[in-house]
Image 1 (tube, rainbow, N blue to C red):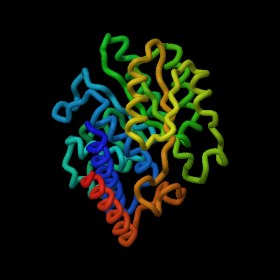
Image 2 (tube, rainbow, N blue to C red):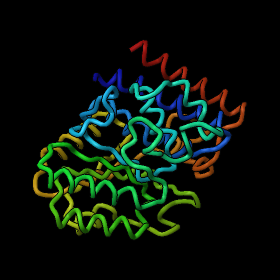
Image 3 (cartoon, one colour):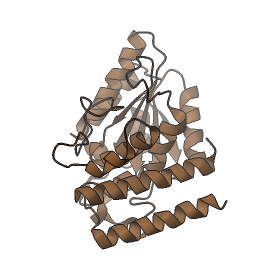
Length: 279
């Protein structure tokens, strides 16, 4: 897709995030918004997938290891055609299949249930190993949070992936620098993230602007061309990106917008979409 079309889709994904969390009166908009470009590029360009055949054994796989940012994941899946966009408004409602964390049993397109931080990446590593053992060409992508990588299980999985040379595996770290209690460097610093992954035999790509499609596209291309080792993409993003009052504000990690805040956010996103249509 052209960048302008991807940018328009990222705006739609953000609208889905704001609308679903507002409807639920709960959820995690901040980290969903920071990853909107990552979700969009993966689902609308990078991955080999087919919404009409979500269980295709040869499809690429995606695991949302930071499962609390499900609003962003669901929005991308909906706009990609896995289920109706209007269902986003049922997020976290009683009886809805769109639970607070991804559920492989009930949500079309979800490759792994996740939410317990650290565990999703381990599942992705297992999928990548299965692909190698089965001589399959599919690739596996896992999105982690920079706060999430404080979990020890992340590094157990990384050690195994590096040892087994799983070059069909890409882990993306959404490095927005904020977790639920504050700046990650103040809570339990994982820095330098790139050097840590290199120590576990990963090819590492630092993306200075993880909300820029050109930079993300170049990183995924480099990952595809890397042989003999897994890739870690460390993407610097802006928490709450696209909604002015949420940007870089830790308080929006896990809080839903009220009616007034929802109105402001949707007006801003509408203007962003209209500006893109005039380009």
